[in-house]
Image 1 (cartoon, rainbow, N blue to C red):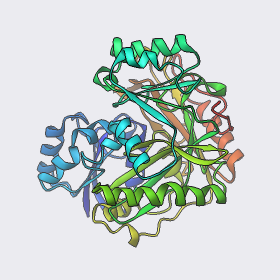
Image 2 (image 1 turned 60 degrees about the vertical axis):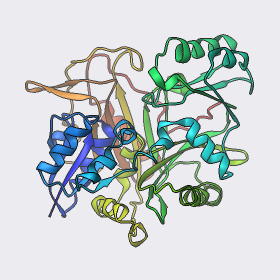
Image 3 (image 1 turned 45 degrees about the vertical axis):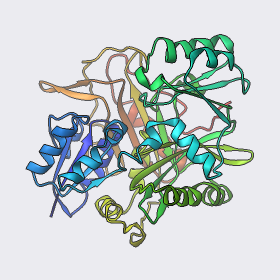
Image 4 (image 1 turned 180 degrees about the vertical axis):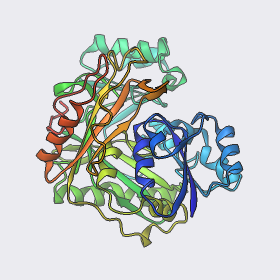
Length: 424
């Protein structure tokens, strides 16, 4: 029987803990720092996900058999390398490989070097030079802070005025800190966005079931980008033809590129895609489960997640036959008033028992904490109402029915999750 530590405290980590808790091979599940929902399936430990030294000390003290790293920041800090140095096997890419998310320019160069379809791009470290390039690929002008910015460092400027403001925010005001020291400008791809999560070890890449998420805060893909306002799985745009193109043009060349470049990637590779008229193109790589995609995807997984993680860590992914449920899944994110801008915390949440007793309904906690006997809001994205259904429409209806039963002051959510929207 194994002891497992999950690092992180958001909706992604709740989904991972929820799935791991179903494994008969795990005797003790910890989560650092966790949240009010995770506390129902794991022992929450008051150590920050970014306290690498503290995480390593706890894992060693408790003789943890496996650490699973959820968020991107500790991965970029090298937490996997640090855990392995103290003898704790860790699921997630090492610091070298974590550059695939921590630096957009690193990924763009990788894609170009290995002829993997993506948008044209240019890089800038000088604000004046970037301002001269306004409109270089037309509008919308895609402007990206190079480093980590919690999913918010991308602006689709509709005109020169919006572009100047985005450039000033990133390189002048430094709203994303050092993440904006280098800015990547890309042509705007058109089509439908989709996501593919893949398990990867040094020899094998295995795509999970597809998903689609919704980045904009408002219905009809309007308003600023967020960390994600909902998801569903499988994606409605993943035809057999698209899946084959994805394998031939993106996934197989990516694994080959990792091997050629000496990137011993082990963990989850999140491939953000645009399904264009010319086939799938890469928007971004992330180094971990997407949030909220993983809530929908893990609802449908029919294989012990511990076994998959263990196989990846030991480069035996090819030995695992990953099974998926036929049911469809939809996740609706309930957000705090004001998100993705400033928002109030500490609002009491009710209706959290709406999924109790159901195997096919789960309320995943993202930004919650205990306040005495109450569970209150503590983040911008607060909860994810997730449901399985016999088909897409059934799952969508059940997820919205669940979302309607949850209440906190200022709660809001998109009403069009599960509907297709072209990003242009």
